[in-house]
Amino acid sequence: MEPADAREHLEMAERIVAASTRELSMRYAAPFFVVWGLASGTVCLIYQLIATGIAPPWTQWIGVGLLALAVVFSAVYGRISSKSACGLTFLQREFLNVLWIAMCVAFVVNVGGWNIFPLFAVSAVWAVAASIVLFYIGLHENRRALAGGIVLVGSIVVGNFMPSIVGYVLAAGFYIGYAGFGIAELLARV
Image (tube, rainbow, N blue to C red; front, side, top):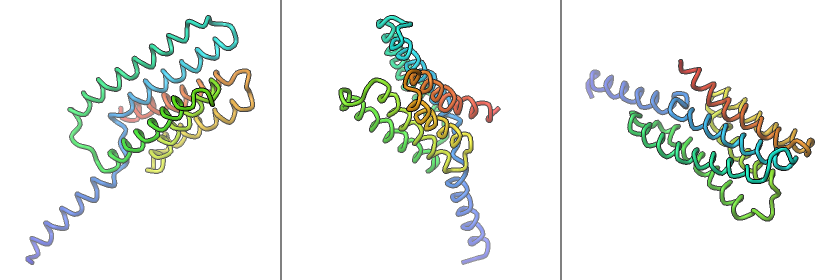
């Protein structure tokens, strides 16, 4: 092998390694975290207001509407951003796999165990799934994601000791931990 050929092969290998090991970029995913964090937090807030008698029971449909809007946003934005993305790195594909697995398991647990879990336990299951996603991102040297995951898990622990305001605590976890992470990622890219 000629030295020029060997150099070309080494440069190609370096480009492949660099592309597969760079930081897990959340440039395209950050809006998902903001929308789902706000929607999830607001649903927790609505149910806390209903549980304390501040809001009438029909306001639960506002939460259902917010979650439906988040699903529509995810579908539309995902389609738009996937067309504009140049291609996903290995880490980005793995992030999406972890996201799908965590959220699908949380969905099945919540739907299948609706009678097993009381109202706010369902929110805690979603907080656990969301924190798994953030911790996965955090394992790839993203301190903002690690902090968001800690906030989500912390909201479950604190809510456990404050049952009269557990909805407010879980809502704060979603607002600060999940939506806050998305906002921090958006601001980090400016």
